[in-house]
Image 1 (tube, helix red, strand yellow):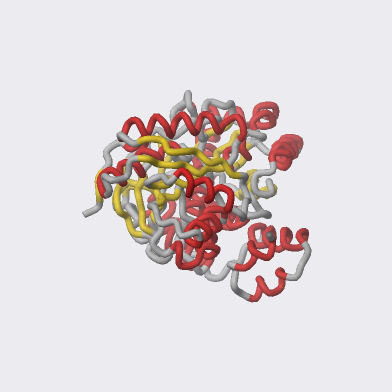
Image 2 (cartoon, rainbow, N blue to C red; image 1 turned 90 degrees about the horizontal axis):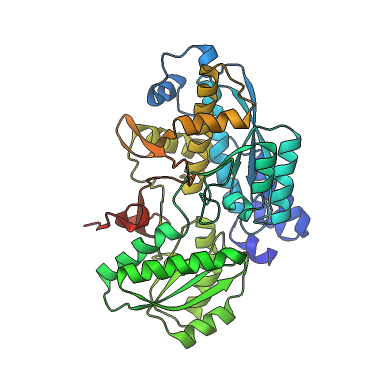
Length: 438
C-alpha cells in the first residue's frame, strides 16, 4: 500500500522514502507540513491585507500586535490523506505569516496528526490540546469523523472545520463549526441536475461512498431525497473503507447492477484508485466525483484528465475578488504551485480566527477563552471570504448559529481538464440556482 501511496510524488523525496518503513514514510510527510518550504518572499503587503479586510484604522492593541496565540490544527499528516494535511497546513501557515506582518498576533500552529481519520488519534488530539489549554483549533475530516466532539466540548476548544464542514452528523455540536458546504450532500443535487440537463438518458444512479458507520444511513437517505427531487432512481449504494486501494469487489457489484451513472464520494487518493480500476474493468458509464485533488489525479493517471467533479471548488483560474487574487499570488510564490480548495479554506479559516480575536479584544475579553471566541461568532456569524465577492469587496461566509454550518457557498460542476479544472455549471447550496456555463 505504501509503495502505491508514494508513487505519485515522482521526485527525489519519493526515491528517498520508497524504501523506508511505514513509520519513516509517516515522518517524511509530517515534516512537509510542519516545517513547510519557503520558496519565495510573500508578495502581499501589510497595507494590502488591512485594506482588503477593512481594518486600516485599527491600532496595535485592537489588531493584537505582539499577542501570543496558540491555534491547534488537526490534520492528516500521515496515511492516504496526507496530501490534504500538507496543503491545508500550507494554507494556514501562509495566513499566520500575513496576519503577523499586518500587525496581528503571533499565532503558533500546534500540529496534531489524526493519521487519515483514525478516531483514537482524533480524540487524543482534542484531549492533548485541551490539557495544554489551547483555546481554538482548525480540524479536518469533520472533527475526525466526530471523535473530537466530546473533547472540544469538555475543554471548551472553539473549532472550525474547513475540510468537511459539519457534514450531516456534526451540525449543532457545541464548539464545532463547519466552514464549507455539507459534504457530500450539497454536491448531490448539483451533480444530478447536471446529468439531467446534459444527458436525460441517465435514470438509475449508484453511489459509492466512504464508510462512516451509523452516519451511512443519513448519507444514503439524503441521496435518495436528491434523486427524487431530480427524477432519478437509486440503482445501488456501495460503502468502502477510507484508505482502500482495491475496489474489485465494488466494481463487480456495479457491473451486476449496471447503473446509468455513478456518484463517487471518496476522499484522499481513494477516488484515484477507484477511477483507474473502474476504467480498467471496461466500465464507461458517466461518473461524477465529490471533489478533486491532484494527488488522486496522479494515482489515476490519464483516466482523471477529463474526470467530472462537483463541489465548492476554489477556482484559482478565476478569482472573484482582490483578496483571492492576493492569496493565489502569495501562495504560488511561497509554495511554487497553485492553491487548491483545501489550501484556500484553511487560509481563510485562520483569518477568521484572527477576526474573532479582534472582536474579543474589542470587548476587553480573554482571547484564550474558547467560550468567548465562540460567543463572538454567535454575536456576528459573518466573516470575509476569498470565495465570492467582487473586485475590492471580499466575499462573505455566514454561519447558521443553530446548525453551525454555512448558509451560502458557491458550488459548481467542473471538468478536470488535465489538472486545470474548467467550470461546466454553477449552483448554490442544495442545488439551488443551477445554471450551465455557456
